[in-house]
Image 1 (cartoon, rainbow, N blue to C red):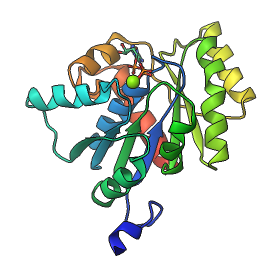
Image 2 (cartoon, rainbow, N blue to C red):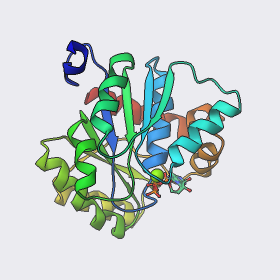
Image 3 (spheres, rainbow, N blue to C red):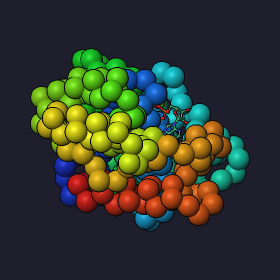
Length: 220
Ligand SMILES: Nc1ncnc2c1ncn2[C@@H]1O[C@H](COP(=O)(O)OP(=O)(O)OP(=O)(O)O)[C@@H](O)[C@H]1O
Ligand SMILES: [Mg+2]
């Protein structure tokens, strides 16, 4: 009973990160998987929870498992939107980081996943449509008093669109991550292979994952 009452914010418990964005295909699953491997590379244990019925993060994890890749210090669970509080509390007792991947929605079903989070990450792919879709999640996070970090995904440095999206994020009064994930084939390939982009050949994607992980860690 005592165990059950232990709060997420307790020092002994791990941190919960919820990745949410109404717009489909913005990079929620990509960010979830790469943050997981970023934190593993930094020596932290990581549990992943998929509440998206599409189950992409689960497919990623199963691909990893079946390929015999290193899954030490990792765990995976699925959960209903409403079972998430219990699942996260349980996993946070035995893992440093719990990452929750969510479906492309910003409705009341999302609230428990936001409520249980220490930090909400909102990936925004490089389009105005993505930034328009961001308001819903930011509103919900604000109502739950949660810090939301907007992360630019599929970024193309130096483009007009990149600057527009950055400005729009600022106008939404959202905290914008300094770290970005570029639009790189390796992110798509790695996801299909059950890998993080930081497990591939040396290159900018590795540095991007490490930088994002460090920035997220500093906010926990
Ligand atoms: N930085 C990136 N560079 C290249 N491709 C990317 C990048 N981020 C995501 N993708 C690709 O874009 C597609 C959508 O990404 P992802 O599945 O992570 O989005 P999602 O927000 O989880 O989608 P959904 O809303 O359907 O759950 C995938 O094919 C993925 O490989
Ligand atoms: Mg997804």
